[in-house]
Length: 268
Image (cartoon, rainbow, N blue to C red; front, side, top):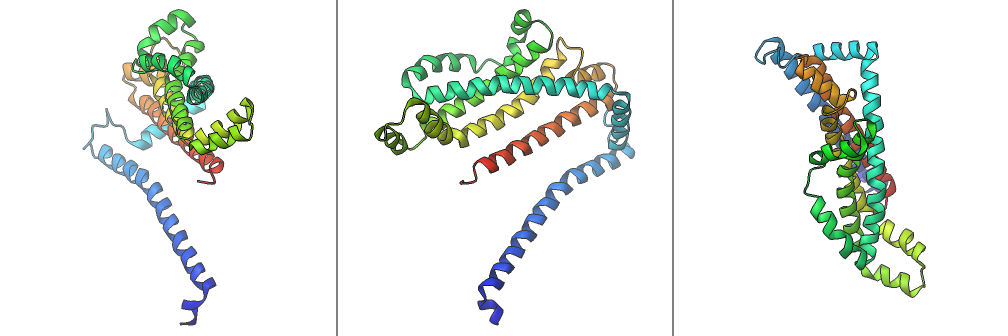
């Protein structure tokens, strides 16, 4: 009974409950994909799923190792990651700067907003023929295509984040005579950061979607090229390797950005 009134013992018991709950969440997170893979393996091996179209995961894994050993897979992955990171940065940096300016200055917002609203509904891939005409069929056209897809969610979320800052912070900065630089870096940027990071997270997902489609057209390398050529040649194991790689990188980038978000926004 004494332990029931001991604050240290109560706190320790609560901590153990939280730890157990976290372990259960981690177990469920890991077990769900393993369960799906085991089910897929069993259904494919028993021909409930046609193994010609849905080869078992173990066969796909063997194909993965063969492609990795030959060096072909590393080439495709390296090219795609280069294009993804290049396009992501080329879309995020202008998106953040223009979004901050739109949120801070009404004239800029009214000037730029109609252009963004007119271009945003057009899928970037629909503009790919024009992009190829302007930038050729090399890496630059793929980078520009990804940048165009990433730019819009980042700029819109950043502008919304600035406009949602409590006006009292703006008034305090003015009253204390903050110059434009401090106003921009110490008020607008930190205040917009939570919503801005959500836009960057969205942009990361769009970048992966875009690179696959962009590499299917006018490309001779990359994960999208691997998926498309394998499909046309009916090499479905190779195709699934490409699809799984895209899924893996999407999950990995999402985890990294979420971790960065928690680190930066510790106060939330």
